[in-house]
Image 1 (tube, rainbow, N blue to C red):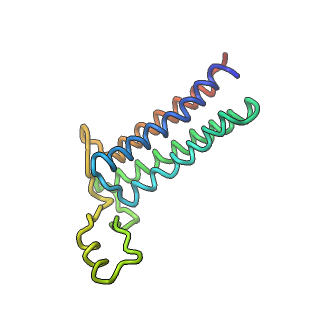
Image 2: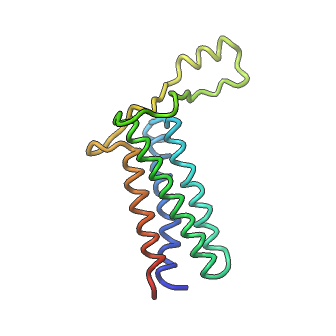
Image 3: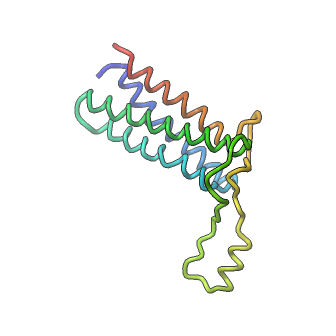
Length: 160
């Protein structure tokens, strides 16, 4: 196995792992509830983790390279969703989703369900909850996903 493929395989595992760890950290430690579009950005990263993990346990270099390329494509898809979400947050275009609710109301009485529903935070997809240097989490996901996918592809193309 070439050094490029080895590096690409490691990046394909670490990039989505780091981005998901950040997203979950902001949620569980920082108290930032994800909106529906935030969840959309996570799914390709979960898929990329599966592809990358398979690249560590499967056969030959061609199969590994294909799985790593698939992981890079999924990471880039998350970046595209991040661009769309950031555009909705910055009001550059209209979103395709309504606000979402984070409360599970299954099995509750009507009164308790109504109380929980009214007490739960409403997370809007068109309002950034956090930003650094004017870039929202969706924007950071887009930037880091594109850079990560690009690095993976560049390592895949590297020989030696």
